[in-house]
Image 1 (cartoon, rainbow, N blue to C red):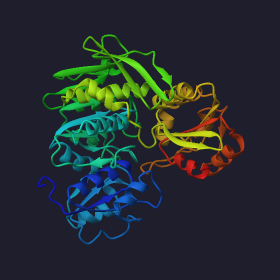
Image 2: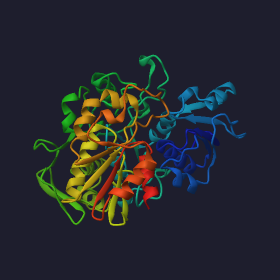
Image 3: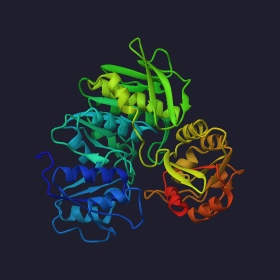
Image 4: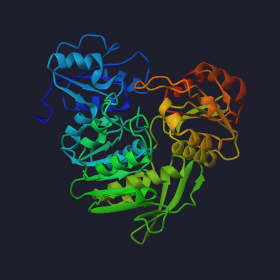
Length: 459
C-alpha cells in the first residue's frame, strides 16, 4: 500500500461515524490504529469495541509512541486540536479525514454519494447490492452499523469499486476565511457521482443556498471518466456543471429512472413501479418510506452504471435491512413500537413523518425531536416550524450543540413549535414515555445528537 506508507495512524475524534469507518479501512490495510475522543458514548461504541482499539479519553494525552501520522476530523477544533498541534510540532505527517479517505478512494473506480439527506443510506444500499452480487467492494459509510454487513468501512485490495459518502462540510470549520475553507468531498475523484439533492445545510460554513450550490457544482466538475452523474431530478435545475453522462431519477416521466408515486405499503414492505429504458420493474423494500424507494433507485442506478444488470440489483435491494439510526426499529416494549431516526434537516424530518404514517397506519404516533446545532436551527427556523407541525404529537428536547460550535441563547427548541411539549433532556423524555405511552402506540426519536440514547432507558 505505497500510497499510504504509514504503520501507526492516530485518529483524533475517532468516535465519529466517518472516522470509525476510516479506522476499519486502515486496519484492513494492515495499519495499526489508535485514537482519541471525548468520554461521551457514540453510536460507534459497539464497532470500536469490536475493533479492540486503544482510545484515549482526552486530547491532552501524549500521542502514542509509535505514531507516524495523525488524522483529524472537523470536530474538536480540527487542525487546532491539541494532539494535532503536538503532531505538527513533532513534524509528523498530519491529514484531515477527507484527505486520507481520498487516498484510498481514488485508487479505485469510485462511486461517491453526496446530498443533504440520503447519502448514508444510498451509500449503504450500493455497498449492499455490490456485496450481494459478489463484487467485493471497498466502502466507507458514516453510520454506526449497516445491518447485515460486518463493517461500515472496508478496504479490499482486489476490489475494483470503492463506495463512499461525499460530504460537503469543510475539513476545518475553524478557518476564519471562508475562501480558504475546503469542502471534504473536494478531494474525491469519482467515476460515478450520486446526488440525492442540493439543499442548503451547514449554515455555519455556507452562508446561503448559492454558496451550497456552488460547492456542489465544483464537485461535479471533478468527476473523472466516464464522468457519470446520477442526480435526483428535483435538483436538476441547480446543475450548472456539464458532465459526460447525466442520469436522472425521480417522479417525473422524463427521468432516466422514473419512479411512480403511488407506492403501496403492506406487511412492512413498500413497493412501487420503476420505469427504465421502456421496461417496467417492481421495486420492493423492507424499510419504510417513499424516500427510501428514491434512495434505492439512486443505488440501483449507480450499480447499473457500474455494469451490473438492473434486475439483479432490484432483487438484491429487496433484502436491504437499513442502517443504524435510519428509521431503525428499536423493538416493541410493553406494547409500544419504538423507532429511531437520524433526521435533523427539515426535508428529512418531513420524509420521516410521512413514512411513519404510511408504515404504521391508524396508530398514535409520538415524535420526539432534538434539534442539532444552533446555527442550523436558527437559519432554517421557519422550515423546521412548518414540518414539525405535520406531526400529530411532537415532543421537543433542548438543542444539541455540535463539538464545533458555541451555545447561542437567542434560539431555543421550544420556539420552533410552541404547542409542543418541551422536556429538559433524555432522562425526562424516558420518564414521559413510561407514563404516557400505551400499548399500540408508536414512538419515534428524531435528531443527529444523542437522543437515540433514550431507547436504552426504555428497554
